[in-house]
Amino acid sequence: MQTHYLACDLGAESGRLVRGSIWENRLEIEELHRFPNRPVHSGDSLHWNVDSLHQELLEGLRQAAKLELPIRSVSCNSWGVDYLLLDKQGQVLAPTFHYRDPRTAAGLARVLERCDWPAIFQETGIQLMPINALFQLGAEQPGRLQQAGKLLGIGDGFNYLLGGQPVVEKSMASTFQLYNPRTGRWSDKLCRAAGVPEELLPDIVASGTSIGKLTEEAQRITGLGELNIIATCSHDTGAAVAAIPFEDPNHAYLSSGTWSLLGVELPRPVITDHCRDLNFTNEIGANETVRLLKNLSGLWLLQESRKAWAADGQNFDYSELTAMAAQAPGFSALIDPSDELFTAPDDMNQAIDAYCSKTGQPTPGTPGKTTRCILESLALIYRRTIEELESLIQRPIPAVHIVGGGSKNHLLNQFTANATGRPVLAGPVEATAIGNLAIQALVGGDLPNWKAVRELARRSFPLERYQPQDRPSWEQAASRFNRLPRFQSSPEAR
Image (cartoon, rainbow, N blue to C red; front, side, top):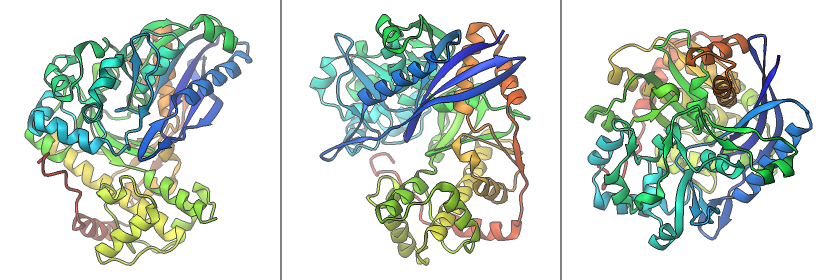
């Protein structure tokens, strides 16, 4: 018999509800409902519209009910670091802050006054990023935290709103910089540094945990029955990596989207001074693995450039921009995507022009040249990050496996192969939803073990392969790129 599952994949640009059906040892997926995720500006503050996202999720479930299929379970995943606060009655305590809200700078300074950066890294193994929940919580008003009853990750929060228990799944917990991967518990030291009351932090559950049933109200609104709610990997990258059909466990992975998350899968964390100095992070993955990775700015740069062009009346889709980039001259200008100029500019194209001017390079000037600048620069920062990874794990990385929406960008995939000098395997595009659905299938008994999660992805979705090309030009470009100004963390952090 066919068995059916539902995954809600919430991203920083959009969300969707996906059906997964297993038939003859293969997974078939169908997007049932897609919706935008637009942050809310309130003065200088930036929030997520939780009510709107919840209504869109329910609409997706209504669409699923119309299929009249026997659906076993549902699970939600999302980006990391952000959180929902629930009040003492279990209601969402507004606002839910966006990780790009400017308050994080004050939170960073406040926490570092109470606990220095080496101690924070030693406790968590998580890289320094002002957007991390540790620093966001450090920016909270004490009165608001006293009002709160529980803190949940975004994906965990939507599982809760559907009827799940108020818990945090381990892959999500590890993104907060409040979780100690050695003890498997919240860090008392860092909770004190952030001013977080102990009772605010929920229980941590393993990926693949049944946490409740769809509420009667949600059943009435959607027309669905009493679905199981599963905490799969609540963090979207954890779910995506769970689905990567690695041909060799020594390969690196790159989850390519708004962010680029580049790393390797290991049995245990790497918490060393060298790891801290290189600003890598140790996040928990499915089946108690560790994802040693670096969070890099990704296609956010192109998304924001596209938005700026649209504001000027130039509406391009991504395929048009990529085609123009393919025709543009190579290596005219390079940027460091991690530079603080690109964190949250009012106009990304102006920020890129300013960086180029500041570094004595010609400004791109056209959408095609700007897109090529972004894609080449991303490929080169991937190269540098892989070299840093190799120094940490003391072994070569023979190839890179790219998943996520960015894996559809053939030009960026080829540039990545060229820049790194390594073969690139691309796919599946829908790795996050596939990982979410496959873990549900494991819980539901359709798969026998964790190994079968990746085998299902391998059988169901083809991969594309890219071989390195034009090596001399890319070696010269890498030399130029490595001389560009580097992003420096705050003096307090150092």
